[in-house]
Image (cartoon, rainbow, N blue to C red; front, side):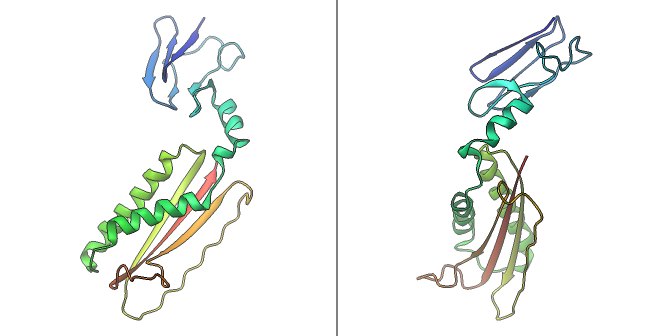
Length: 182
C-alpha cells in the first residue's frame, strides 16, 4: 500500500522503502519499481502539485488549468516579455555579424525562460531573426493549424518603426512566440 504526503510544496511518496521526494511548485514524482495498484483511484501512478498548490494526478491538473483564465494565452503579457527582453538587451548594441548567433540564442532563451515563469500550461516555440539595417527587405510569414481558442502566436518587430525615438539604428529584430496548450 502506498500513500502520498504533500506539505508546503514538497511531495513525498511512501512506498514501503521505494520512494522519492522533491521540492518545487509543480514536480512529478514516480516511484522506482512496480506499483501495486498502478493507476487505481486509491493510488494514482503520478501525483503532482499544481501551480495553485493542489495535489492530484497530472490529468486532474491539466483539466483544472484548461478551464482557468489564469491559463489563457494573453498577447499583451507575451508582448511585454518580448519587448522588455529586446529593449533591455539590444538597445545599445551595434550590429556585428559575428555576434548575431549569440544574440539570437540569448533572446530566444530569455524569452522562453520568462514565458515558462508564468506557469501556464503551454509548450512554447520562440524564433528570432536579427538583420542589419541597410535598406534590404525581408518577408516573413507564419501559418498555424491549431486550436485557435486555446493556442496563440505573437510576432514582435523591434524597434517599432513609428517609435518616437529610434532605439537602435543598426539592426532589426523579429521575435515570434508560439504557445501551444497541452
